[in-house]
Image (cartoon, rainbow, N blue to C red):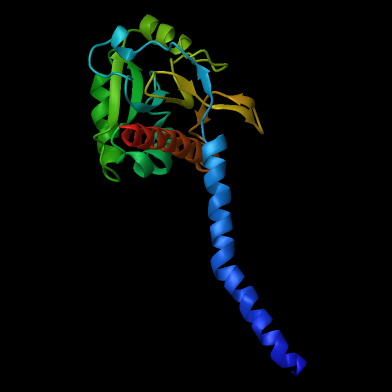
Length: 217
């Protein structure tokens, strides 16, 4: 048989491997990765629920993105827009997802403005605003047990992921910070490259747990 004729079946075999076998191998690799490494570490347990300070919004049985706007609503408009575009719009359709912002009492009249602005781009139904006195805000924030401080306006550009058991989730081996408690909403890159991934992980974790519980029944 001429050599050129012998090469043709080999080329076909290589093409078939690339088209069919490699995708399966890749899927099994990433599926294994999700099962073995797909849990976002618990950084703080025993966080206070918001209902301990104010009736209405609870963190229990919700996957919550938690932020503190304080008295700096104007200064944090850009942060809120980034969070809305990169995180909220991507995940708000998940049943148990919510985004909660904590503000001091007396700031209630300013919230309709931000609702109106962000509402131009998204459904605001899962944006929640909670108003507390200054001492309660400080106490609640302290229960998160982070290495981040509120500023003089009782605000921070960082937001936090809190799970259904009211535990703070984050990273223990972040390449930049080591232990990563929160996500900087002033950085679109951080929201895109880190928080999107971590939110996906915790949502997948609960979906897998739900499927397992259903299968066990």
